[in-house]
Image (cartoon, rainbow, N blue to C red; front, side, top):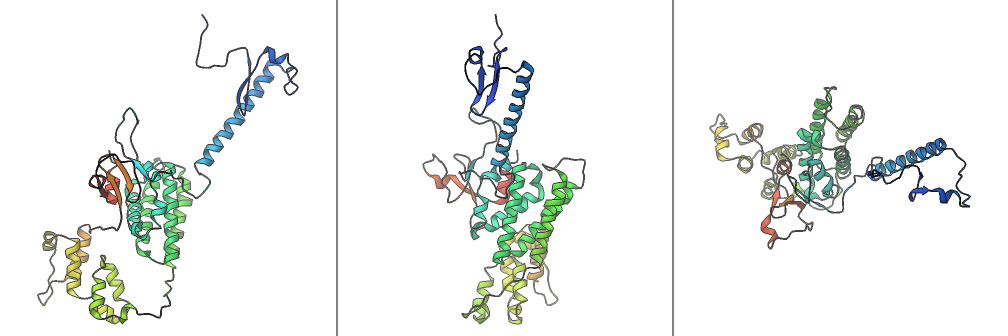
Length: 356
């Protein structure tokens, strides 16, 4: 009984790989009058020719796959769907589990950084990934991470806004990369270690230098400015600032603004917004006059406890269909009341979804 293997090419026949696929030149074909094929070659010559053609077509296929994954371009590859199904186990329909790198590739972060409501959310997410999650990203995800970071820096240079958060992000990323590439014997990051040292880290230093040399151009405006407003309105605007460092920077503009930023009630509300009463009681600071030093307490509390994070728009997670998506993206949900199933996801919550 003849042996029937998985290879459908029968022995003793001459097969040639063409653009349309494998073709069999049988004995009938050899007797035909086809002038394009020479049948005077020996068996060894036919084998060498077929092997060379197979290698050539395999190399062409690999090149097409490489170009498709955008390894030679600086444009990240994203899917059409702007949502991702987060699964933590194998089922009949899905095998394996969803990774952080896969979610980072599937969600539309390039468009999110263009939206001022999502910008701070994406920057905070990039910072958390830079601190501890870089080794968990795939090669394509790490490439997309650096490309998105480059777009963020370019946006800051063009808009001349959010300079300090991006400086902190670049510093965090640089420190993390120094720690990861310090031990050359460990393959912590995907890719060549020299590429990370000589390319990525040099780009980070170049971006930091560009941000240090940025010149904020004062817009030419003939209308009313902040200093033209009454003091009560200026204080009302300052109460909208959630970062004490912004208040300190604002107070350095003019002496009048400097006096307003020293308002004790302003710093008291800032402390009560970020920290609980129990945390505040543990870090009380009293002046010589018997008054609470709310400004000093705020910066001391920031060193001891995490500040409260608030974003205009975040990613959402559907508890019914386990899909992670942006709020304005239509995801295939089968629940009757989709709004009750969706909950906002903080940047740290996004990282925690992929910790198994």
